[in-house]
Length: 65
Image 1 (cartoon, rainbow, N blue to C red):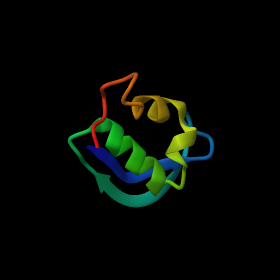
Image 2 (cartoon, rainbow, N blue to C red):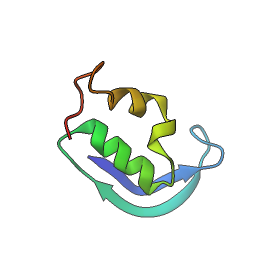
Image 3 (cartoon, one colour):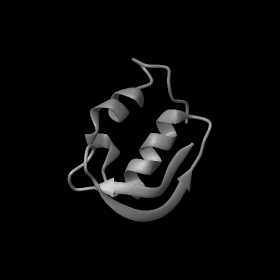
Image 4 (cartoon, one colour):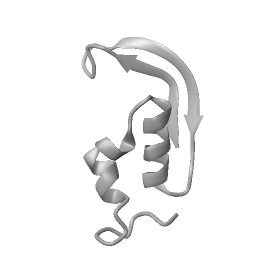
């Protein structure tokens, strides 16, 4: 479960500027949820090493789909 109702930007994580996002995301697979949330934020999840490696089915058995 990802709570994206209120997020922070700019000088985070210690003194972020609050940003109203109003988003909730949930799923059974944490890798898929992270990939979807990164796309919602406008990032290419293929460029995020932790997500890219977790999606590699030959090396890690974390994601099916």
